[in-house]
Image 1 (cartoon, protein in one colour):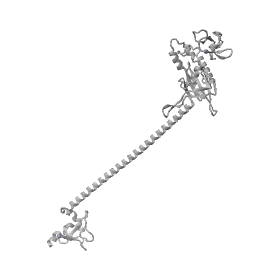
Image 2 (tube, helix red, strand yellow; image 1 turned 45 degrees about the horizontal axis):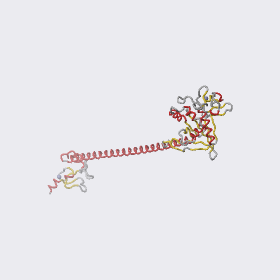
Image 3 (cartoon, rainbow, N blue to C red; image 1 turned 180 degrees about the horizontal axis):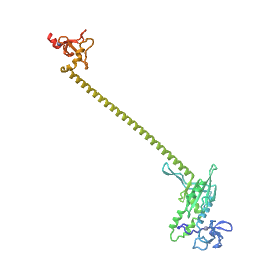
Image 4 (cartoon, rainbow, N blue to C red; image 1 turned 90 degrees about the vertical axis):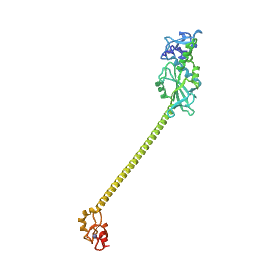
Length: 367
Ligand SMILES: [Zn+2]
Ligand SMILES: [Zn+2]
């Protein structure tokens, strides 16, 4: 039993002769009340303390109070209050929208007509659960549960059991409310008065019909779960789209880089090719210059003797031009018999004397 709550007197007992629930003021005083604890699993005899004005009337357990009697009574009284009014007020329904990253209100607090109210042991708590049936205009029936938390916390497992068979589970958290009331009690207030005030159909109806009640909240709601699941799918779809977009951008970037690299390599290859061609041209030019230099060197008269053995023979025939390996024509002077390149000659060639002429020296001598 909770340290704060301690001994919990009750204001109703089960009247043994009839099995009905009776208020402490409608029975005999003391052990003559003929009442037992309303929780059948406790079943202790109760002692009615309903005489005198100093003490607030209540039942005491014969062997000390049990832990579930108060919650047991509250379920009974709440079910009766809802049954007699034929309606109940559900708290605001909100859900966590994963796509928006925020809590979203789906429906404001709503008062609904109740087709039936039953007590059940679905959650596995020792106090019964209040099961409601709401019949829509189209005749469709939906079941909801209200579970009260006071001395004993409502566990996730208990909510899950109720969720299996309902559209929603409303948690009425009287625990925080009573703890606050007990802490704030002034010296003169009777602690029992506070505890007993919760065992009151009018008080409970006040909680169950207040659209702004902070005591009621959804511990489970099928619609909220469905909306949350939808928002998760929306968020996942958005993430998938973002992922694909990033993938597409990555591929485009890689393709662009690949193309740029290929262009750069092609450009470098072209430069290399041009460089090689340029070198080739330069070598060719050097080779030609060297050739020309050699040729010029060979053209000098002091080198004529190198050609003379071969050219002296060639100039003797007149069928084809006598040329040396540099392509120079050689001619023989008809006057002095000198064999030399054509530039040494004033005239040469003609029918039958292709390689014969008159050198400048002889021409001047004749002139
Ligand atoms: Zn008891
Ligand atoms: Zn001559």
